[in-house]
Length: 264
Length: 158
Image 1: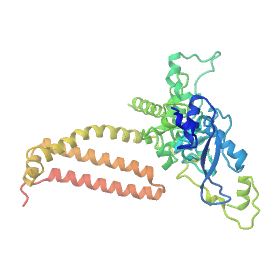
Image 2: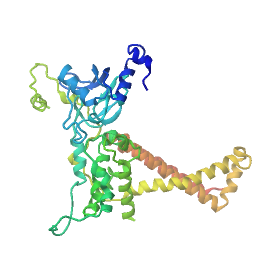
Image 3: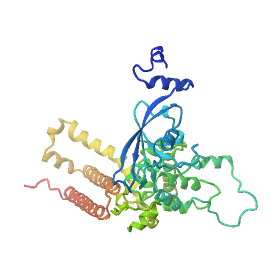
Image 4: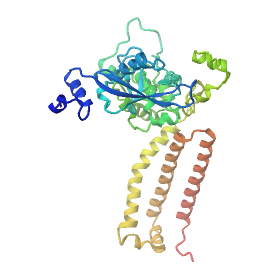
């Protein structure tokens, strides 16, 4: 990718190219980026505003590192959630360049650092401050699908045996980390937060298709309701947004199919 | 909301004398889900509506395309359409049935689509209710009027 012209004269032309090329080959070359963050503080101003931050960074760092640098070195009032920083806890889902991603799983070099990188809170949930949203409606929908094992009869004295084939039936949806990237990328959820949303349906799917569970009928009944799976428009935003690569739309369709085949 | 409450919510004591209510500044999403939201209808209406959209859509592809080809392409195209042409077609129960089925499926398919659009985009419950009243009225009126015309059509009307 790198051409001698740019390496010899990094200032000429696009100053980022050399740094980005270096990133591809594993070398360290710093580039200057602009991070444009949607700031909102209800105690200071009624409106959310875009604020630009200039940083000189290695393009191989993650967006979360860039935000951390801004908070630690430039503006301590910047507010956002993060915990494990390795794509497991699901705290730092945010809208980066218009797409829901985990800031800790997104590298600067992959989000067109030549242009300002826009960072917004995930949509469809109440913004409390900067990138922090009220997750309560999201978790309420999660709780409403009863995401726990439901069985009848006596507890077995040994573990509940399951075949490899039975595990594979719902294995994909066990990967959910409840980051809300899917639900807050769903246009139906944006317009009507009463919709259960992809994440709740994924977690219902995880138990509906678990051979050890006996609560499938109850969960299907819940998802058969007005705000359940039938509101899905199969726009695939959720599948695109999922940082764990879960085939979310497919899971929702499987729940729909289960409803149709069980009711007829 | 009292100013003390907002101060404790944010964890910051508000010391300035001009009290502005920060709850007015919150960027609220429309119709957020709450603990009270779990209304159960216990019917299969949404599933049947969803299935109807798929099935009627497939049938309508043939009905509507066939209709368009017969009306607009074959036998001299649109210029042939006249009162006599319609009268000739509706003399046959087959074309009466075709048009009746097309009318009902297209109207219900379209109305159900509009219903989902209203559900998605109407934010206030009253707006939603009145839009649906309007939709149902228009649908029922069109379907009944169309059905009436198909069955009471008089080719000898003067």
